[in-house]
Length: 99
Image (tube, rainbow, N blue to C red; front, side, top):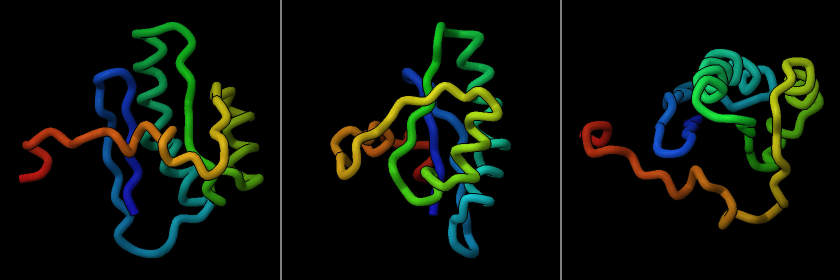
């Protein structure tokens, strides 16, 4: 399992989960460590950034939803079964990451 992020042409951190399965608890920890710092950088560079993730169970879990709301993370909805709208699928790694 890999968690990645981007905004504009800026690639964020790439987090790999080597052991276990992703749960709402592990997803919230990933957001705390990786997404929050990136969101702060985005807020310095642009107006009204929005966070988007798909409808995975860990993304829609009560724990995740409550954490996002409690931390005032601006979100946009993602229609179910719409992989063509999943922008992260279109991101390609720079060659230096692949070597």
